[in-house]
Amino acid sequence: MSGKDTTSHLARFVKMHWFKISLVAFLLFLIFKKDFSFTINLNAPAPTETTMPPSRQPVQQEPPPKRETFTEQAKQQSMTPPPEQGVLDRFDFSSILGGSNEQLKDELYRIDSETVVAYIERFGRVARSEQKKFGIPASIILANALLHSQAGKNESSSRTNNHFGLACTDDWIGEKWEKDGDCYRVYENAWTSFRDHSFFLTTGTFADLRRLDSKDYKGWAKAMEKKEYTKSDDLADQLIEVIEKWRLYEID
Image (cartoon, rainbow, N blue to C red):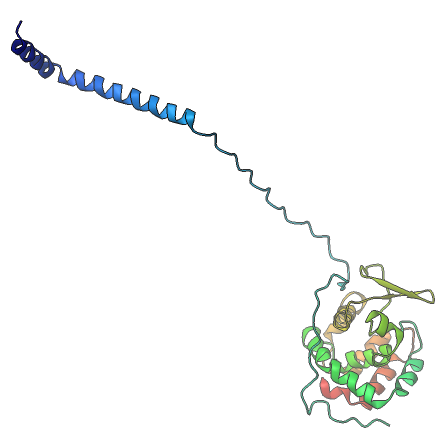
């Protein structure tokens, strides 16, 4: 058979069986491609497994104590500036929990007027801010602070930032300072003392005081005496006298 006849015969064969030939070629292509891909994958380095860090589970919060308090972990907060001029004009000057308020008042009156005025000016806006948030008259806050810190000069306020003579209680979780068998709360700064005093006067035994008018300093003073903020039986008179002597009601 000549070459021409062979070519012609092959052409007729391809023409008659083109579909089968195409199918076989396609299958061979797939087999070759799969084998080629498998060979490449065998030569490729094994992928490195990335370990994802375990997600942080939310910390289970301990149930809050019956009275909210501040501790040494409280955030640092700067004291607010003194009140604007005119709010605290020149004044007409002439405990520790369980202590004698009469003694505290007498000691306060022996402090020079400049020291008392400076204390009022320093904490006037702080007291007003607490009044706005908790409804306690600012005059009550300042008078109570003046009596129990002696205008910031007694040992309790200077060593512990405790401006209200607040004693340790079962629910207190902060630092403590003991003196003469008594335990007192320790604060990281004066502001936290003022805030804890606000919580103290508006929760627990004193919770119903929040129903009083925020400018009724006499009502608040009498209610604090009735609730036995101290053992003194004349706490209301002491607070009212301090408020009126130094016109603290003007800050309310």
